[in-house]
Structure formats: structure tokens, C-alpha cells
Image (cartoon, rainbow, N blue to C red; front, side, top):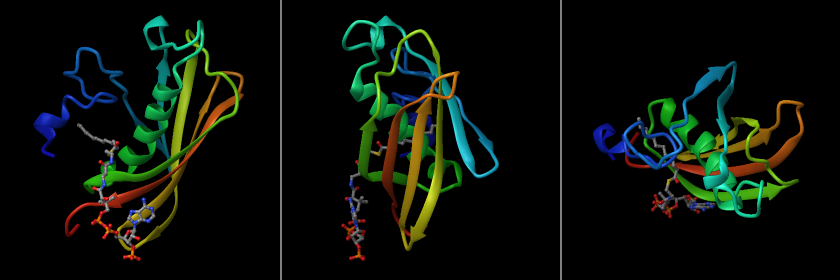
Length: 132
Ligand SMILES: CCCCCCCCCCCC(=O)SCCNC(=O)CCNC(=O)[C@H](O)C(C)(C)COP(=O)(O)OP(=O)(O)OC[C@H]1O[C@@H](n2cnc3c(N)ncnc32)[C@H](O)[C@@H]1OP(=O)(O)O
């Protein structure tokens, strides 16, 4: 999983022509990204496809562990779709660590609209690969 090939990550790889090209920053103990979905990301008209909503949550949580210098993979992902996630509005995607036991991190995440409405929430177990 070297970084050269990781440049093709569907969610964050800058070289992936059909990827989401997410960028990230850390605010306190929270990892943040933003995304505006287009019609190419929708399922039903005007609504982001649920699989891509879960991709955003998966990425913000697993990549936070990766950003801490660890090779991390998602072992379990749970998504609660609270209400439709619209296209054309800036989505704020955030993730944070809730616990750690050995090589397993537990994280939570959410997607919020500019007015603060939460459209989806996630929980993940993220495993560290190898001897890190
Ligand atoms: C610039 C570019 C950047 C690029 C940056 C890129 C960031 C990309 C982020 C994307 C994130 C992804 O989508 S990653 C892709 C999707 N995920 C994957 O492909 C992962 C596939 N699964 C695996 O590789 C494996 O199953 C692991 C590593 C998760 C676990 O395997 P393992 O290491 O052999 O561990 P194993 O012996 O099974 O279990 C060890 C302990 O963990 C527990 N455990 C294992 N799995 C689970 C589970 N799902 N839920 C609860 N507990 C679990 C076991 O009970 C055990 O506890 P005990 O008995 O010891 O107490």
C-alpha cells in the first residue's frame, strides 16, 4: 500500500480522474473534509447515492488513522442515513476517534449541511495492519 499507488485512492487520490479528490485538515481532535456532490454522484434525482455517502464516512474515519502515520484498513462500517444528502450543497464531513484497543481503533463520523443539519452518521472499526 505504498503512497505512489495510493495516489489513485478513489476518495482522496489526486491522480484518479473519476475520484472524489477529497482534501483534509485536522481541527483539534477532529478530521475534516468538504465535498459538493454533483449529478454524477446521485442515485435518486437530487440526492447523493448512499454508497457514496458511506464512502465519505469510511474515508474520513479510516484516513484519520492513516494520517497519524499508521497503515489502516476499515474492518467494520456502520452508516445511519438520517435524511437525504443533497447534491449541490457543501457537505462537511468530520471524523474522530472514540476509543482504541490494541490494533483496533473505533471512530465516529458525520456529514452535515451548511445549516448544521446532519444527514448521515457513521461508526467504524479501523484495524492497523502489520507491526505498527
Ligand atoms: C496519499 C494517499 C493516502 C491514501 C490513504 C488511503 C486511506 C484509505 C481509507 C479507505 C479505507 C478502506 O476502505 S480499507 C478497505 C476495506 N477494508 C479491507 O479491505 C480490510 C479487509 N480485512 C482485513 O484486512 C482483516 O480482516 C483485518 C486487518 C481487518 C483484521 O484481520 P487480522 O489482522 O488477521 O485480525 P484478526 O486476527 O482477524 O482479528 C484481530 C482482532 O481484531 C478483532 N476484529 C477483527 N475484525 C473485526 C471486526 N470487523 N469487528 C470487530 N472486531 C474485529 C478480532 O476479533 C481480533 O480480536 P482479538 O481476538 O485479538 O481480541
